[in-house]
Amino acid sequence: MSRTIYDLIGLFAGVCFILALKGLSHPKTARRGNKIGALGATIATLVVFFYANEGSSLPLNNLGWILGAIAVGALVGVPAARKVQMTQMPQLVALFNGVGGGAAALVAIVEYLHLGDTATTAEVVFTVFTVIVGCVSFSGSIITFMKLQELMTTRPVVFPGGRFVIAGTLVAVLGVAVWVVTALGTTPLLVLAGLSLLFGVLFVLPVGGADVPIVISLLNAFTGLTVAASGYVLDSVLLIIAGTLVGASGTILTRLMAEAMGRSLFGTLFGAFTAKPQDTSGVAEDRPVRSGSPDDVAILLNYARRVVIVPGFGLAVAQAQHTVRELADLMISKGIDVAYGIHPVAGRMPGHMNVLLAEANVPYDQLLEMDEVNPTFGQTDVAIVIGANDVVNPAAQNTPGCPIYGMPILEVSNAANVIFLKRSMRPGFAGIENELLYDPKTMLLFGDAKASLTKVVGALKAL
Image 1 (cartoon, rainbow, N blue to C red):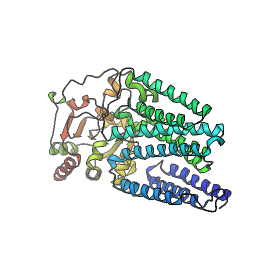
Image 2 (cartoon, one colour):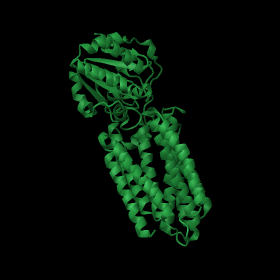
Image 3 (tube, rainbow, N blue to C red):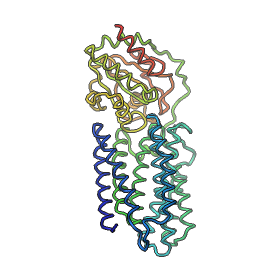
Image 4 (cartoon, rainbow, N blue to C red):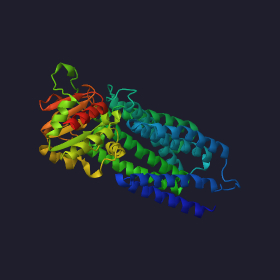
């Protein structure tokens, strides 16, 4: 296969990636966009086997190692992707993203060793960039995975002088990068990789659990940039296109998510160093709350005219999306106006709730974004909050210094009645109490969300 044909096929694969991003921008076309993206990735992978290396009659050197690596990757990746629960999808995304960044860094190191003294200054600079950003993406993604999986605390991890340690590590990374460019050699490159891995860990540790999805998106953009830089080093137009797409889309998504959280990206990453300490000495169980039964909830819903359902991570954990759909259809059959209030960062990643409800075939026109649904809460008789906490917490509006202060929320407190479905009084992912739980108009229904909703459906049918 000639280089021209190879580049044209790579360009076609790049177009597939662009169409995939376009398709993923809307739930109705997301499945098709995903398939187009998979087609592009398959073409990009297969075409490499038919492009002969210069000076070689074989399609590829080390073909056995390559096929073996693909087999191992498939044996690990396919079962992981098929068996992963929806609640664990963000963790899987973080791991896959980290692996991508780490792979790009390793490829850059190997290519650097291959080029040796023949490497141009530009190639060395791009190699250094790939190693730095790829290693940061890898180690940072591992920390985000551990936070989401709750293998470590989800609270920001700060220590005395932490900001200076982070700044010092960054200066060291940049200093060693200059050393690699000017002196060349394997040792400075490996030192650079080690310092970059350390910086990735320090970079993510101060981020609180509620902000982890933003960091995942940012690290995803980092990985895209490393792939694009690797494309320059490897002289691959396809890698440049794919990496640039990922980097650009990840950057835009990061900015949008930061805006949805109501803070700057810098504040998201390093706000823990300036945040005021929160008083966590109070015990939630010592304060009176108004709890109810499924029958109480059913009676309240039966006489409502408008109900807004606010899904959260607890809905995903309980796999209660189909039961929610059944409850909504039952209320609609009784002439009740039903809508779903979707917060941009509800769950553990953007679009988490949209995908979850799509599994239950909830009509798209019932899903209302935050800006659409907030003005309607004043005319809402009942707001049902299912497993959500931080995205409806009034502390975001009236408690300066708390981890979520400034984040736009779903203003369910404006509804006439609020029903919270919770397993316990445990705070949300951000680790702060929700004063709305103690409001006299709030009724708490404790237990597994799916089991509780099933009982509510049965009680409502009996009325």
